[in-house]
Image 1 (cartoon, rainbow, N blue to C red):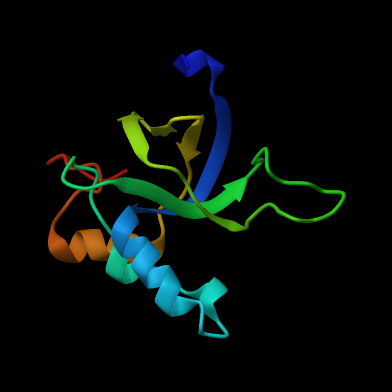
Image 2 (cartoon, one colour):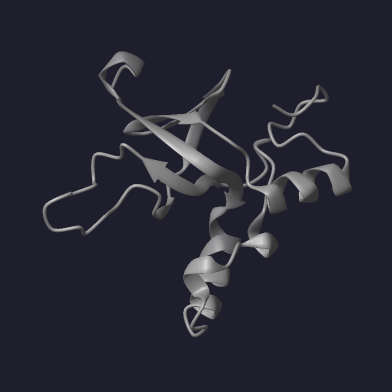
Length: 126
């Protein structure tokens, strides 16, 4: 699938997460009554090629949103499939190009505390 053929969607309040650690976090968090409000701090990761990374955040204009039955609403948290590339302010998965909005405040603090850029580069964060 060419970059031009992919769906384009917007994601806000985003963080890069390690797919394995995220799934472990999710399995443990589902027992909490507030799990939809929780942030997967233990799964935060850097897009540097050392593990399988996904994008976690709040979707807007997502093609899965169905305003009639309300099964998926703007602002719902999603986890993407594995990231295959990052270009400027866009994250590319196998089916979709996500334009990045605001970074998750917990993720940003995690990156700053650890002195890292989420994109695995030495330049400043977006």
